[in-house]
Image 1 (spheres, one colour):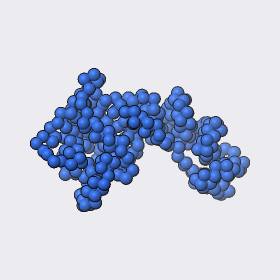
Image 2 (cartoon, one colour; image 1 turned 135 degrees about the horizontal axis):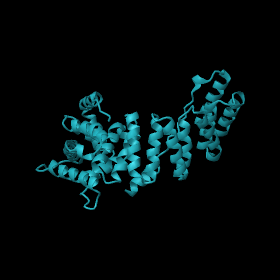
Image 3 (tube, helix red, strand yellow; image 1 turned 90 degrees about the vertical axis):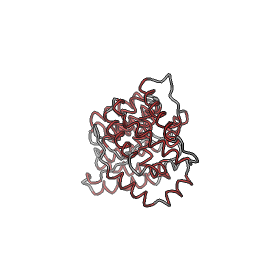
Image 4 (cartoon, one colour; image 1 turned 120 degrees about the vertical axis):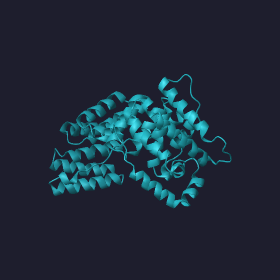
Length: 332
C-alpha cells in the first residue's frame, strides 16, 4: 500500500488550458491569446504573461486572458500571483475549470481544507463538470479519505465513462479499504482503457495481489465478504490444471472472480457497482474474450510475453474490441 501512496502523490493535477477563442470579438485579443498560449507551451512563461497583459489592457474583463495568465503563473511556480487571477474568473461564473485550477494550487500545497472548499463550490455551480469530481476524488485520496474518494470517482465516471483516471481512483480508494471486489473491477476497467504501453506496473500488480490475497479476519464486514468471494473463486479456478503460464493462470482466476462477483453483486449495496461494473465484467467472463482481455491488462507485468502473444492474436484483439464497444452499460 505504501508504494501505491507514493505513486498517487506523483499524479499530475488536471489544470487544463482551455482557451475559448470563439468568444473573443476583438481579433487583436484573439491573436494575443494564441501567442500567449504558444509561448506558454514553449516554456517561455514571462513572454506569455506579457501577451496576456497586453490582451487585458484592451479588454480588462476578458476572463479567458485572466485564466490563461493565472495558468501560466501557476505552472511557472508563481502560485501566489495566480490565485487572484483565478478568484476573479470564479467570480465571473464563466469558467468551471477556474475552480479546478485554484483548488489544485491548495491541493498541491497540502491545504486540503481550501482545496475541498473550491472543488465543492465548483461542483455546486457546475455539478456536471467531471474534472471537478475527479480532482475532488484525488484530493480525498491524498488525505486517505477513501470512502469519499470512491464516491467522487463514481460521480466523475457517471459524467464521463471514458475518463480513465477516475477508474484508477475508484480502484485505489476501494483497495485501501480492503474492498477487493470493487477494487478489482475498478482497476480492471482502468487497465482495459489504458493503452498497454502506458499501464506501468502498479495497477496490474495490485490486480494480481488481490487475486492472491487471503481474507483478513479483522476486516470490516463488507471488506471481508468481498475478500472471501474472490478467495473462493480463485481457489476453484485452476484446480486440476498444471503448467499454466502467468497470464493463463490469471485469466482463469479473473474469469472465476468476475462471475462470482457478478452473481453476488447485490450484496455490495451499490446499484451503480452492481449494474455498471458487475454486469459488464460478468458478461466479459461469460464471453470468449477473457484471454485477450487478460493479456491486455497484464502487459505491465509480463510485457515481452504479452506483446508477442497479442501480436499473434490480432483477429482476437479486434473481436474483443468490437465486443467491448457493443456493450451498453447501465448507470444508476
